[in-house]
Length: 164
Image (spheres, rainbow, N blue to C red):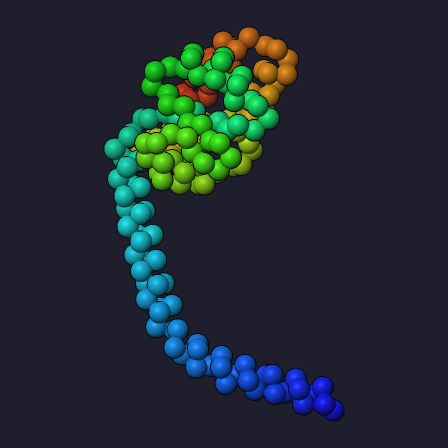
């Protein structure tokens, strides 16, 4: 009986405190939600304009997982075409300083998460992506010529055109 009375008094106390606090903080929460809505809307507009401004740009995105980045930095990056920008991620942090916010959004919006490295090409104001994870690991594990992987990367970028 005492425990039941104690439970009821706790519920009544929470209601007495909870309802006024909810009413008190509701306007603050509402203002925050409206502010957040317009922030997201503004970012989407800036991101869309950014994509249009870099039409045709190509990104080769890789990370530091399993020390693949040493192989990539030694064998792939120096041999990439000059119009392909390498993007290196240390964990979740993008090392590139330029347009980090937009590149992060591109990476978060990847269509099929199959693993790094990813190829991203800007086509018709949209970021088109492809994972070459399987191909990369096949080349690396079978000690195939890295130049053949460069050919595959270039061909994959060309194939991204037809996917838009």
